[in-house]
Amino acid sequence: MVQRAAAFLLVCGMVYLGFIGYGMHALPEQFTVTNQQQLAQGAPYSAQTLAGPMEAAGVPSQDLEDPQASADVPKEISGAFKFLKFFPVKPTKITVAKRSYVVAGGDIFGIKLYTKGVLVAKTDLVATQNGNANPAQTAGLRSGDVITKINGSEVNRKKEVSDAIEQSGGTPLQITVERGGSELQLECTPVKSALGDKYIAGLWIRDSSAGIGTVTFYDKKSNTLAGLGHAICDVDSGEVIPISGGELVSAKVMGCYKGVDGTPGELCGVFEPQQLATLERNGETGVYGQLGEAPPDGELMPVALKSEVKPGPAEILVTVSGKEKHSYQVEITRVSPNSNSVQKNMTIKVTDPALIEATGGIVQGMSGSPLIQDGMLAGAVTHVFVNSPLEGYAIYAETMLETARHSSAQR
Image (tube, rainbow, N blue to C red; front, side, top):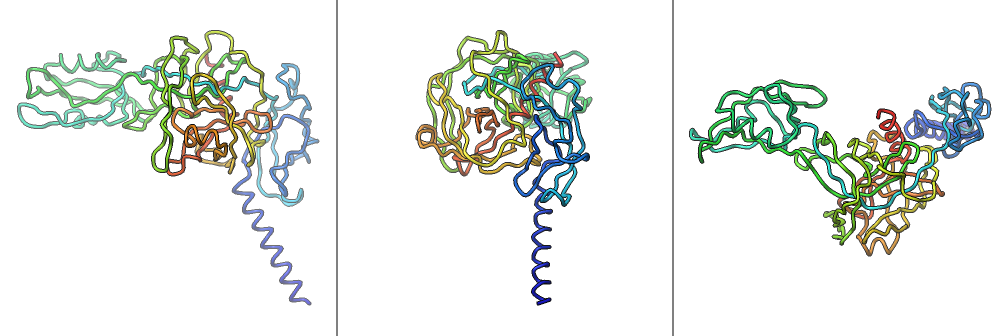
């Protein structure tokens, strides 16, 4: 009898430790609430403030974007997650916020951007009158560097760099580059080409980029268009392209290469002359632009808090032909609140036969497509699984909205 009791207690202890261990890994270190309800992070876990259950935190019941709704409420409260409402699991920070509303996107758009400085795509050997050489590599230039100055003068276009090299006469050039957030001073000595009197340095450079993506939302409060859910990166270096300006324009889908295992598909689109927004930011959570006019007409949709997004059925808004967006069925298969990647907060799977027939699943150009769950904007598609085009990653919509409003505040 005693042995059975001991065995039972041992099993209970192991189960308890398993729940605690899982909670330490899976539960968020911080989250946001909008009302007085106690927030359950999936039974048997619940969140409490240090003063007690959520009801004791003084969190307002209003959840609309009303300037008077929660003026006197503290923005951040210390709390903890508990197992079965009693056993502590891990501390957390609870942020009190009003519910945000945006107009959901799903529209295809074109992206035109100009770099801040000139991006080094790669360095290469060049033929000189004395054999092969790589002056750029010898100087220490690398793929992904951004050339901002030559001999103290700012450069933003490829022609400015190529002119400086050609006109150098073989004298060393003082080149200022940005690399990994730091500024470096390098010296590059161009060489005379074996093909003539032209001076060269073995540099492949870029000063602009273009592509298509999908609008995630239009935010009337910040007058911002948000899309993609990830940064535009250089195809050779993989580095985020720093921008000096650009525009987001209307576009039209002309066709689609279907995705198959091992080969991502792609929407094929053409730009149209209508400018939607002035490009302001190209960052890890997407591209953001200031709308020239009021956001397009559309019903305001609540933005889901990160803590409200859960595995289960959802919808995706996407344009796969022409300019007309449609809603298709998907499944949020996993939510990762503590993911180290800001763009990979959840995994999704396309389940709608119509979308699978049209595209084969998730394809390039669908990045930014809004995910709707329980009538709220939950996230946006960011990446496709190369070996499984029906599946991909998505970012929280709340994260993108935070970026949009932070960018707006800096205008």
